[in-house]
Image (cartoon, rainbow, N blue to C red):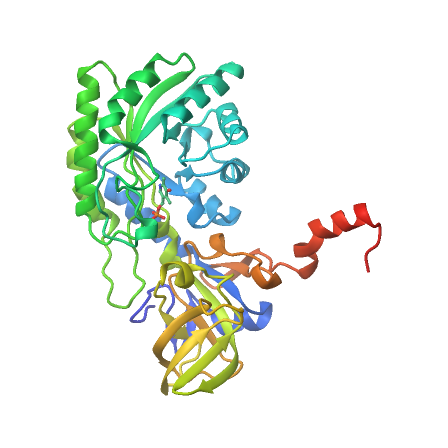
Length: 428
Ligand SMILES: *Cc1c(COP(=O)(O)O)cnc(C)c1O
């Protein structure tokens, strides 16, 4: 298998497959747009992470927000991973997917009382606490439930992950974590709280990180802090270094491998002997997924050639929000090339997938694949323009499974219909 871009999306006789299934066949059977994920690509990443960290006691916690489909979560659970969650909704999903609460860590600057109470009741492995006020509130909520909550302080190591500013989270001016110089004080406050167990330390510096040196810097600082805590009698059980490893979006991208990350951080963490947690999201699922779409119209305007497709920014927000590059492959290669803007149908100029891109000369009705869309693709999608969210498909060898049906119009308007029935009692 394999082509120049992705091993799990090979071309056979100029036709793009996911593993051993023709994407054209799936498109003809279920319609477009749909997200497709290669199960074996996911398993391969899981194994890369496991192998990389096998020499050191490590829990890999998949970051649910990157792709929260229950069938995807099940793959991670079956393979022994935990999860990193950032909301009560993700806790709900995680528990539904059968994850052991002792493998769930929960970060986020704004956890509501209800979200906190649900997670306290579930007895999760760790709340990754991002402010002094949050410490107080968790203590109160745990007390009122007659429970003890496990907490770690999320520190902000003030390192630059050299990625897009919207996904840089470890710089001092960002809203995340507690600054290094305030962290000791936060731990001193935390250990005095009756309803808290202080179990760990957490940092997460950003996403789509293409070089392991910022990790080394962040983990060095974190380990130093653990030593200082030890000196004043505060002993921790684990160190959680967050997620953020980058993936290949452009053909010439060479992101670090889990092995590179492990080699950079394990020697540092070994010095303190704490259990290690990592929270990869994008790097476990991103390259395993693609968004398959169909060409609706072609249009020439001035010097520009537009290819208008049936997916929009509601399906894949990354180009609009991060100005992100996604590689785009024709499902059937024609061999002839054009330079085109590939755009969606939505009434926003930000609704684009590619600008001035050299691509096969696609015609009305042809299919194309937007690659590396497995992470922050479906999970960031919306119903903007009352567009049903796309179907999701999981491929395993020569079989495929619809793991989320395409939404219907009725499904989208149902909550409003209920309201209408209450007020006027009439619906057409
Ligand atoms: C988003 C997030 C992650 C995952 O980041 P990726 O770039 O998808 O690996 C991990 N930990 C926390 C706290 C996060 O917010």
